[in-house]
Image (cartoon, rainbow, N blue to C red; front, side, top):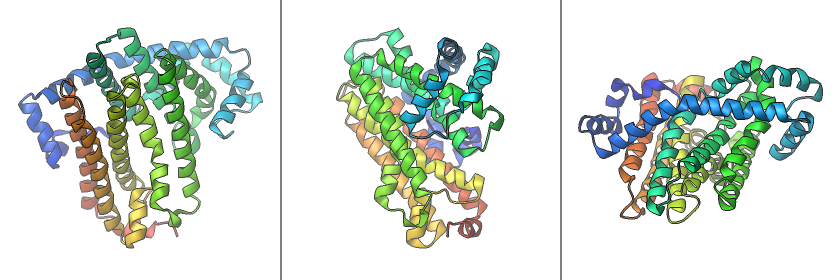
Length: 371
């Protein structure tokens, strides 16, 4: 679930943080957490290409069978509240025809799946589903595949949507993504619905919250110097709604695990959000708008302190995630997996914070603050 850059898990990177050293130690002693984490990671790496093929086939079926793609685009625009991520009617026939070629469609699917966030999330969902199935004594391999696939596909929808809005990568494929988006959402819904009405409703509520978080995010860009803590909390809905809801649904929305998975995943995702903001500041040489580093920088009038307080905020999020873990039932089978997962999240944030300190770009970040 943590981050974008593979160098963050190199031995040198792990040795540079306290939590990284604990990860190495657990690896040396083959702790239960390390073994479980490795098992699910290896399973996900083996499963990922098969998942991509299933996703491509489902998408191809939906695109080919849609007799009125123009109304599909219109309905999607109404649901997400913007026409910025949909096509003009005149563009649709040629793009639909192009994407009915499976090899071309597969290429686009692999492009949007090329995200470490998606790849890191797959083993986590599998582990949570297995833990809940063991607790409720209702293992079902097909249900596991549908539920995990559905949530991964829903999370992956944010990749093409972000690329369309940001216009910072894959520029020549953005129109293809616009055609694909409504079908991606439809496939995710159909798979999640197989787990029952309550699980689907949880997903719908989470999807609505995530859109609200993105809307607030966009609105705050208009007046970045007036950001309040309450607005930042609302903006972070985009993290907790997506991961928290998926966590809840891996337990088929049944408590206590449903609520505890929601809390653990939501807070861990918000913690990763802080790390993303630190990493993005290094890559872009400016403080993201809106973000916790910007919020704290404006309050303290000191960009370095802004990042120091962001790290403290990220520790609070992770502390909440660990509190949820303490509440898990005594006979819960995957506690050590979650402990190890949270160690990787902690290492990710600490690594990027340390990198930022080494680069010493405070004056550049200060100069690029919004006026």
